[in-house]
Amino acid sequence: MSNRFETAFAKGPALVCFITGGDGDTAANLDALVEGGADVIELGMPFTDPMADGPAIQEANIRSLDKGTRTADIFRMAAEFRTRHPHVPLVLMGYANPMTIRGPEWFAAECAKAGVDGVICVDIPPEEDAALGPALREAGVSLIRLATPTTDDARLPAVLEGSSGFLYYVSVAGITGMQQAAQASIEEAVARLKAASDIPVAVGFGVRTPEQASKIAKVADGVVVGSALVDLVRQHGDKAAGPLKELTSALAGAVHSAR
Image 1 (cartoon, rainbow, N blue to C red):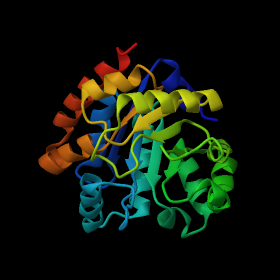
Image 2 (cartoon, one colour):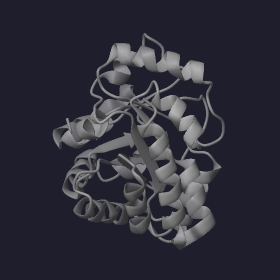
Image 3 (cartoon, rainbow, N blue to C red):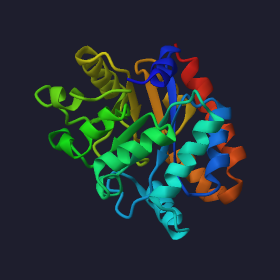
Image 4 (cartoon, rainbow, N blue to C red):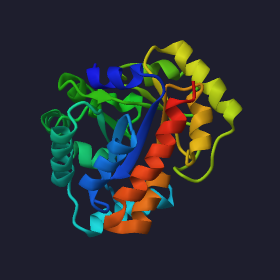
């Protein structure tokens, strides 16, 4: 679907880094992630009820919304990122309301115009794909689906249908940033997902340290880190770029040398 994704995952295990748009100096923070070695960027669209996210990202959503961040601002950040980083895949992650309120075709067209490669919509299940999926695919934007520990063999084909870019494996039955899944359960799940599909599998939720990232990168195609990075933005505010680059660099080193 997107050559940027193919290139990013072809090099070996990829580091996927998440921050919330509009929280802190977003442009500087995005640049810091790329400079630190992130292979794929996820930009969170702030939302009032981010049900999959733990306290760190919930608070980042509130900080961003309190500053007046709107969907138009997120698309501007995305377009400016694309100008500065023509080759790095950019994913918008968020919830159905901001993505569908003006109609899915509008949202998909704005994504394409801004150079967005993929979209993760947490609260549109595969059974409701018509709400967004066809418009994104028509616009050439990957719909990145979530698989979880409760996605059984009967449901997995529905999750994979129409999915592209990569598959995001949510490694815990819970919210972001709180607990980490046992490595054995991650290895078992990744093996099952890879047997069912040829798109890359990236593992997230609860990954905070280079050590954790390295273990996951031994078996998965990608490792997603969010809350640990968002915590740095909370701590350092508009001066978070340096600490973000430092942590990203440590994570990237661990992921890229895992195999």
